[in-house]
Amino acid sequence: MNSIISFIVVLGLLIFVHEFGHFIIAKLFNVKVLKFSLGFGPKVYGRKYGETEYLISGFPLGGYVKMFGEKPEEDVEPDDADRAFSSKPVWQRFLIVAAGPVSNLLFAVLLFFLIFAIAGIPEPESGTQIGAVTQDSPAEAAGLKDDDIILSINGTETREWQDVSELIRDSNGMEVELSILRGDEVLHLTGTPEMDEIKSIFGEVVGKRFILGISRSTRVIYEKSSLIDSFMAGLAQTWTFIYLTVMGIVKIFQRIVPASELGGPILIAQMAGQQLEAGWINLTYFMGLISINLGILNLLPVPVLDGGHLFFFSLEALRGKPLEQQTQEKFQQFGLFLLISLMIFVFYNDLARIFAKG
Image (cartoon, rainbow, N blue to C red; front, side, top):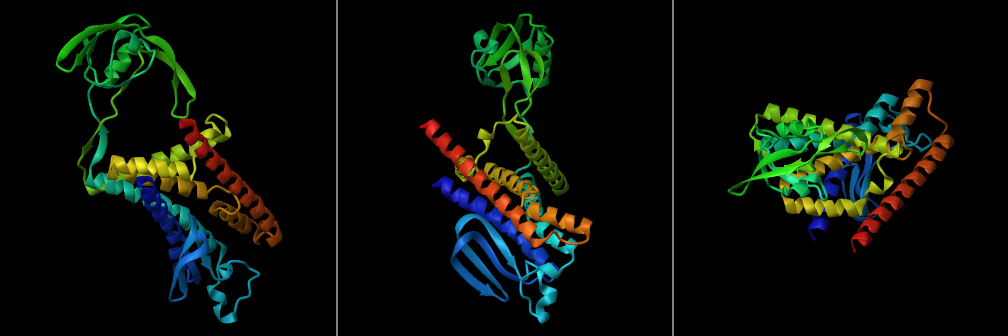
């Protein structure tokens, strides 16, 4: 039940933010908006306020804003011609379409800002507590356990995790003696570091070094901060996730990250439920990350996505005239085929994960 509720909250809010971006900029440029819908397909609920009908539609994985005169070939009454989307300068149409994904990116900044302003900015907990011991590693053979605190290595006091990393790295594979605190007891253990590969967050091998097979505790402390510091931290966090999202897409095309890692609505629902159980901070962080993913993916130059329309508008600005309607329709059909294929693939991945666990 948590998964369903959190999925509806997360996806519904992010779709609303995305479509509201299109809506508000269209209104700013005096484009007549006919429909604002959360979801696709048959109407579940609808009500008209002014010139716009606001809808909740049956298929929840998306939404749309229908604007008057979206296509140049539509019949437009002379009195309303200046309010048609297609009659607007290309730069205005570009901004209206770009406003959706940009709104998702800005919404992520807002979410992270709220977390940092209310809870504080997270900082790794200082110290040398072990978070995890790798199975079949020298550390496991030496008898190290999760939550042990490393007091010294070869007689050298360790105050921060960096001290631990440097002393093990510089051991040149020679046996090291560790003094550790386990509960109220101080123990003296020995282990022999081994050479192992260093991998990036995407699984790429970026070097080698001597390791014991331990990782630091992931516990964090939240330090209170000013509104300005919280906002700057929100910007920095958003930029980090934008970079990782873009690089993740690049690594998939480079076949460094396997396509089997891609997830769809089922995985999002499962993860949203887990984050809800972990607390509001985790759920809000997760929502910010999904908002960034939604924004970046919509900026990809794939026809039917916002990025595809932005690509057509860019060509129009360079050529001084739009692509022929027939050409655009062919590209959009191809883009729709890609999108449907991707949806089927991620659904398959989601189901494969469920059955693999079963």
